[in-house]
Image (cartoon, rainbow, N blue to C red; front, side, top):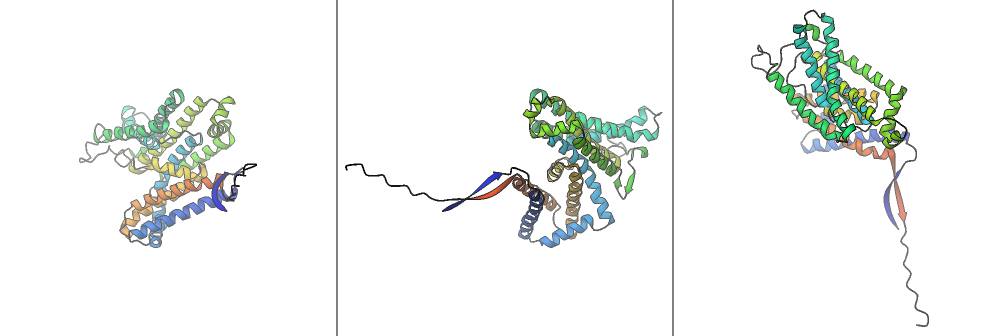
Length: 371
């Protein structure tokens, strides 16, 4: 008798597996990271404890975690809505950067060109510009995909580098502050272009992210458009037979996706730096992919996972101070969590079955009659 393992697709999704598999996956990722920490001579328990205290151990720590969570929330929502329709938007980083560029342009030059504009109008105009230019940056790959069938992974990824290099050219070149003592960056925005802060460095972008999650949840679960997005994501061929326009939905979804990522850039320049400078592109758009997958593309899950991953980043920074470990430990942990969660997601759709098989003896050939 022999045994073999076989994956069998579940006829109905298992609620128990949907809850237990992610928990087990995260636990295994922590175990794997603990093994790596042991290999470099660090205590896993002390490392995790230091990261938790660094991220959530006080009012200042929590506020810094929320500061990093805001762009992760907005870019995570941006990526998740595109992924729901199986449009693989890897360009949230570039869309964030272009949103920051547009908001900075409004803050720096609009008061000079139109001095009659009231101060209160500056932030709404920056908001609109950040959303619009982020949406425009996402619309290009959408058009190429919808009309010519060009792979969106390549186009969205390549446009990240275009956006980053364009903004770098501006803040070290034509937009550079002449009174900046040689440091790359634009002049500081006028105070009317600063996003109000809630506590510490936590700015109004947190409210914008929460409202965006609510709006996205309503669209996806309570509207005809949300139904069309879900149908296209589950079965594009069936959606086409049902009369749902793939081209229109690809364009609309990427306008929304790019716009949300652009708002993350608006929040960074208007709420944190108050200028356009180096540090706008630190990988939030790429981490958003992890946020979206861990949240299973759920808007509420995106908010929670963004806070947890932001805590990893802040806690990783604290490791350099308290334990002398590189901050990249947090990035390693992020990668392991994604690896195990994606691998574990197989077991929410399939069950592992042990198959027993018996060896059947081959009968000997009968002797020929009359032999």
